[in-house]
Length: 359
Image (cartoon, rainbow, N blue to C red; front, side, top):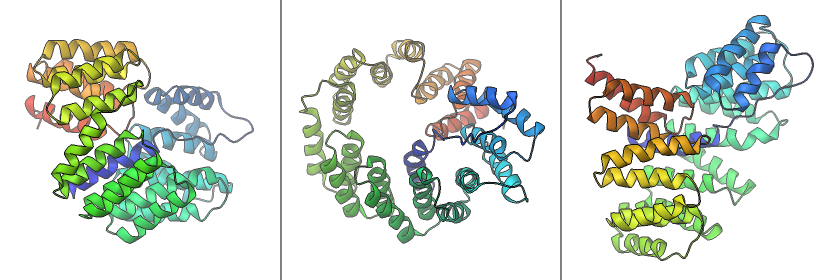
């Protein structure tokens, strides 16, 4: 079950990471304005204080509570976020239908983050009954699919996936989620069909290729898995994402130097190539080059950093027993509020505390 939860969490949370804050209209406090500016810049740790100040000024204003709760979700403070949303939903504070739906949406995220999957499912279903603010429906169905699966309601979870694909047959994240759900439940043939369908819809969606690769392995179809990797490595691609995919395929084949070559080519087009270059150098045992590369990546990328870079640096520093540096990297990574990388970051946080004797 732990492995399943990690797989599904990885697929699910990217879809809700960039939440839309319903700002409404009318008079707003200066603290709320500042909080919104910071949240739009992705500075959620700084925004939290200003949202809290706005709520303190007027607890009856729904948009203040919505912004505060969503920020807490970004910071992985799910219990506090649930309380923030419930404080408005469970009282007689007047809310519009749009605000009620946003509150339920945020609460569903917070419940899922705490592992309260049954409640998350019920909350998302309740929100979907509100027909206005339909731009939230995709993510609400996504929450329903994941929380349904995690609470043992596989058929209901699959219906959510089918509904999502009925609405948008080109939604690649849903194919990936659906495939991972099938694979995690042991239906590898079903997973294979879904990944193949995704590739048929978009042959440049490389995550589906690697999902299919793993499904082939799970099904004992090693020759099909090898052929798929050969198919990827033979791609004539000039964009960075394609080069990164080719590099990963070479990596899975154990051809580390070839993988590094493609990551280097990708780096000529975008900074993410530098992250994978450094990852490969770490794999090759070139720890100093890997460290320098990861640090350069953070310096060059600045925005939309792959949070795993902080986890990799923390691992290097832990091996050297440079615990203060490791702690600094983990803190920076978690401060991004990116839930996709949180599992690995928090796992290393636990290991670090053990190494320091902070049981």
